[in-house]
Image (cartoon, rainbow, N blue to C red; front, top):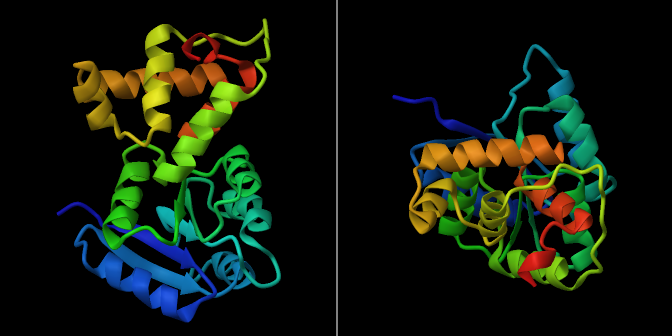
Length: 222
């Protein structure tokens, strides 16, 4: 049996922590290995090498006491660089969404998400996708569409197929869904995504979306 996806939860509301815990218990492929009420306690636990539990996925709230989630992102990235980070928050503020994506998080879900959406979000990022709330994905696409375009002659432009795949990722599609939509194999999709990350010099899908927008690579799709 494959190893379970190991999840750490950083959330100050005990009630919501219990709700997320119940959701995770409903999926036999995911295990909640640790949960904390503050980013400081979570980071401190990662410094204790004898008891350290390194997660595959970190579910991180933004509105935390003392150090907030946005401030904590780079510290978690340094402590657990291979861990996927999904923001799980009440905030749908445009500034928070863009800041989190620019910092290289792998997903952004709102607390209004259902248990099924949270579980699907965890599986999505583990499969190389971007876990984005539909409202957040819509905002990102609108931002890309209406923001002034910038040109960077030194940037390695994406092919039309790569741009199309990146747009589908921004809509929240997983690799398997993209393959079905474009009538290509999942392996081919994964290869395109790997090339996208290499060309844009980014670690994940949200960062790729943000970088492509900043470089004006979607200008022909307006």
